[in-house]
Image (tube, rainbow, N blue to C red; front, side):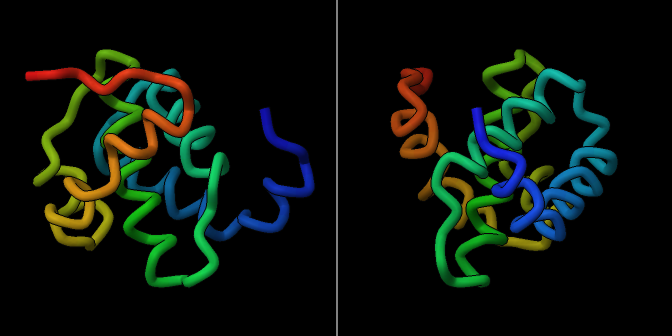
Length: 102
């Protein structure tokens, strides 16, 4: 759980996350999970925030069984698929979750 201060500090990024989630038509559970993953460890650099936001959406959709492809999430967030691919597993592990082993 994150503080209200975190949510206020990153409000613009959380709005962007919601807009991308709308484009992806994600469930409320996937959105909530993505938000928590994003707020878990927000990077300092703005350019890294966008990639983390995208990876959070992808991982959140997997956790909520509302999966989207990395390509779909990349398109909705305007990042490369490789940016998502290189970050999503670490986000899950940092949250204490085990990434799927396909």
